[in-house]
Image (cartoon, rainbow, N blue to C red; front, side, top):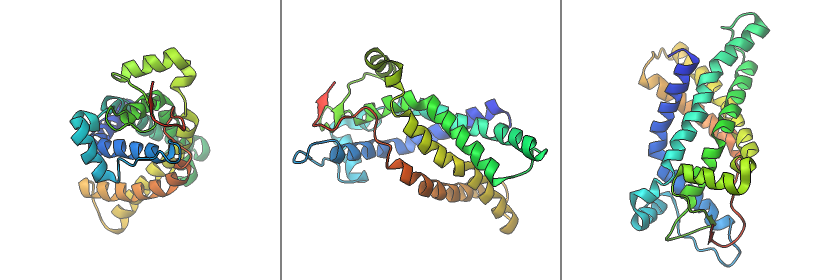
Length: 248
């Protein structure tokens, strides 16, 4: 699929497949972050001691439904985020390269990074309300609560409750930090993916196929982690207060 719509759909579907496998560990990560940072000193029970232990604790107390709480929101968020990143990156890069170099096929690191960041910022802005609800759904536990608890039945219930009590501003809480973080990651994700892919094809003789895409994605993922980690320090789970667990 070479069109913007095709890339948007393909990127969203691929991201949904990935998030199905990673969602349980994302749930544990969120709860581990909350249990230590968002409670008063002296009241810090650590229910989740690591990824594997956390998954086992949640499944034992809440079942598979607990470990996959918020998966619907995660799907919508990934479709919007990665759909925008993959759908708008190439058209933007081609248009800007044509404007600057008079040739849309010209590859420029600066142009590629700018378009990657811009498409990532657009995706983060589009998916921000769903990321907020997803995080609150994942952090909720009727058995081992950590941080402020938000009891939503589903994504729509969460969106309507947030809008009713906090308005549009509440739905987009934390969007600035999300845009900065995603912009940093996206500025290097697609450029390094295509850079690695071209080099692997040219110097190692690799051809189009799963092995080439896996190797290119691995190289890109490593760079993305390095770049996103510092700004990620400033991105906390939205809507949580520094207090002992309570339920809203």
